[in-house]
Every structure is written in C-alpha cells, then in structure tokens.
Image 1 (spheres, helix red, strand yellow):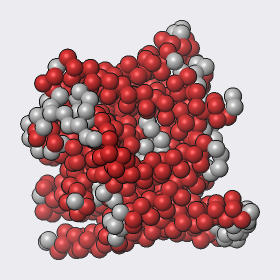
Image 2: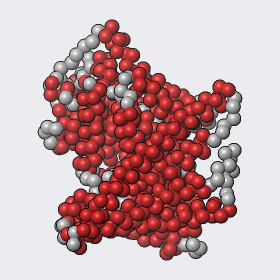
Image 3: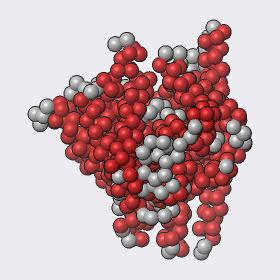
Image 4: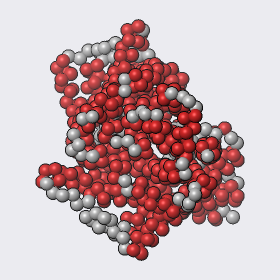
Length: 204
Length: 429
C-alpha cells in the first residue's frame, strides 16, 4: 500500500539531485557569460575588434539556466506565493490550497512548455538561425530551454502525485506540508540569517 | 473587463497560487474571455523574447556580485572603517549602520541580504555599548532598504523592463534620492540622540591616523560602485556589460580578501539562480500579461475609467500612493511591484508624469513596505539576527524611518529634480 509513496519519494529525491546540478551548471553558464561579455567589451574598446556574440551566448545562458532552475526553485519552495490565508485555515484547507497552487503552477508549466515546443519545432523544421554573426541554429538554445521546462513540468506533476498519495493513501497532512507548502517568511529570513552568521564565523 | 481582471487576480492570489502562475492564468483568462483573435499563439514567442532579453542578463549578474561581496567578508571591514569615521557623533554606531548599509546597498541588489549582513555585524554591539535596542535595530532594518534605491538595483531593472523606462536613467535617478534618504536617516539619529542622549550609547573617538589607516577598507566597494556607475553613466557600457565586468572584479576582490573558494562560489551561484529563476518566471508571466492587457484594450479602458473620475493628476498620484502604502502592508514587495506596474505605468505616463521619476517614487514606497508590519521582510531579518526581545521593539524602532521615507516621497513630488537631475545631465536634456 505504501509502495507508491516510497517510490515517489525516491523519484523526488532524484529530481532534487538532478535539479541542483542543473542549478550549478546554469549558474556556471552565467558566470562564464560574465567573463565572455567582459572580454568582448574590453576587446571592443581597447583593440577595436568587433563584437562576436558574447551577448547572444549570455542571453541563451539566461534563458536555459532559468528554465532548468524552475524545478529546483519549486522543490525548495522558493516560488513566491502571497500567503495571507494559509496559516488561518485548518489542515484540510491548507492541503486543498497546496493542491490548487500546484495545479496552477502545473498549468503554467505545461502551457509554456507546449507553446515553446511549437517554437522549437518550427525552428527545427525550417532550420532557422539567429540573424547575428553567430548564426546560431535556433533549435539548440530553444531545445535546451524546452527541456528545462519539460523537467519543470514533470517535477510539478511528481510533487502533485506525491501530495495526492499522502492525502489518499497515507492520510498524512504533515507530509504535504513538508513536500510543498509555502516557505514561511520566517523560514526565509532564517535562511538569510543562518547564511550571514556562517559567513561571519568563516571570515572572522 | 477591468473589474473582472482585478477579481480574478485577487482570487488567484488568495488561493495562494504562486505569483508567476497567477499572472499567467489571469492573462489566459482575459485572452479567452475578451480577445477577438486568439493571442495565445504568440505565447511561445513572448516567452522566448522575455527569456532571452539582454538587459535582463544583468539581473543574475548583479545578484551574483552581491552574493560574492557578501560572502567575501568585506562588509565587516567596511563597518569597522565607518565606525571609526562616524561614531563620534551623537548616535554613534547607528551612523555606521546606515553608512555600511548605504555602501553595501550600492553593490548588492537585495534589501534582505543587506539587512542580514549589516545586522550580523552590528547587532551584537548594541547591548555592549548601551544603545537603545529598538532604535538601533530600526536603523539596521531601515538602512537595509536603501539597497533597492541606490543602483545597481534589481527592483529598478524590473521596473524599467516592465514600464519600458531606460534602466541607465533609472540608475542615475536613484543616486541622489538614495543619498538624501541616507542623510535624512543619519540626521534623524543625530537629532533624536541629542534630545534623548540615553538612546545613544557610548561614543568612541578614533584618531585621524586610525581613521586614515582604515580608509583603505572602503576602497574595494567604492571602486566597484564607481566603476559600474561610471561605465553606465558615460555610456561606455550598458548595464549588463557593466554588471559582467563587475562580476569579474568582485571575484578578484574575493580572491584578494582570501575568501574565494569553490564552496563559496558554489553557494553564491546557487543563491543567484534561486533568486533569478523566481524573478524571471514572474517576469515572463508579467510580460505576457502586459501584452494581453494592451491587446484587449484593458489598459485603455483603465485610463478612460480614471479619466471619468475627474481627478487632477496630483490627486490621482496621491490616490496611487495611498494604494501602495496599504498594499505594502500585506504583499511581498517584488510581487507588489510586478503585479501593479503593467497597469500603473501607462496611467502615470498618461497623466504626464515622468516614468523614470515615478520609478524612484515607487521604490521609496516599496522600501516603506519592507519595514512596515505585518509583512515587512527586513523587520523579520533584523529580529531574527537579534535573537532577544521581540519583534515589536524592531517595529517601534523603525517608525521614525518610515516617517522619513514618507517625507522623501513628498520631497520627490515637490522637487522632481532630486531624481531627474542626474539623468537629464547625462542625456544633456
């Protein structure tokens, strides 16, 4: 009976690992972009070279790293929700709100994935390239972007399934709050504080 | 149409649907209900255009600069240096609180991070030197809000993008009001500690030699800030390009401070992506909503509705200010900005106000929201770092600063030049 929740837990744990690596990779791409743009502007200003497309690579990095970070942001509950009522309703109400919130986010994830897939598909069929010096085949950045959105949609669905399993099979509302729910303002500030204090210690 | 939109949005937010999804669903509902031709075909291109906007690349870069600097340990040295320069005045270390917050906000895009950093350094000093803890905590909470007014500011980038106002001009426009507000804070501390000397705590004097020796600690932040703003001001680089070079410089500074490590960079990148994704997802939805609102004519309908109210532009402006102050009590500040800008920005322009000037005014109102209960993030941060007394003390200590922010709003209305002088100078207008 509890095999399904355990399986979903394992999948979620796996998704967290994958999404964390995606975040490091995306952050790394942003950091590399910083170097490329710096190099580009310095070579332009001081050596009169023309731009070769660092800006273009950097905005692909922004798009792809964003779409791949969405799942992580969801897993650590960092997507902003206006949370004026959840603390004032009974547990069952909270669970219902969490499910509605997940459905809402899931709808956005699915609709954006679908819309972007059409854009990607058209670029692929037509062999579109960017109208820049790089002539980037558009399906490459768009494909990576869509893949991140697909991952986001799958993770949203996975969390939703896990919540439903908790409600219908385990009948345990506490699990729901652990998996989804809002990060209360207190959690959020606690994290900022813990980080600041750890730094104070480390840097003396 | 307008009422439908407002009710749907409030309903979605009340169901605690994430802000990005709420804006997105609202756009879809409006399109389905009111659009003559299906607009959602444009969705894919809208998403891609927002996601690959070069100006928005500056968001992760500025966040990364802030993350790197906060983790580099430079803040402690800045506080120490400002302490030696400012603590002789009545109010002592509280001036260093404001000063450090001012310097850090100039490089970090986040108010919460600024308040947490200054708080961890400064708060242990309050009981040691006998300060009034309420006022001391208030000075940190308020000082931390300067982060979003002084450039580079993520909130200004978000505003500029959604209101189609020039981000370099917004950055220029934030400087004088940011410094004036910071000066007002210090003046208030000075005056209040002259009236009530027991609030002030023990003053310490440093010799000029000590002061100059510590001046060197201010150099990194000033250089970084001066470089970023100078490059943007002279048109040498766009905000994104300046942010890119700033990121490289921040890495070098962390290296020279001996605090650069893989772990530190990893943490900084994780924090950067978390915030970036949260903002970008809302931006993608907000920009799509912007497009739908304009396409179905809701923006025009709002403008004509306001016109029938027969209010003068000034009355409308004060109505808006009241509206932001009330919403600011309850709604998380970045969401508040993004939700309202698509409707408010066209209104402001149609009333004949300068969108750059209004951006600065809006940011001061948002700063106020950060230190007003029940949802005032900086209050929670400061109380959390303090670990003694209760939140009410921080709230009480912040009241003088909230009032000063309101004074700043009035000053901006009376003297728009405070915001517009520098941008006009730069464009020669």
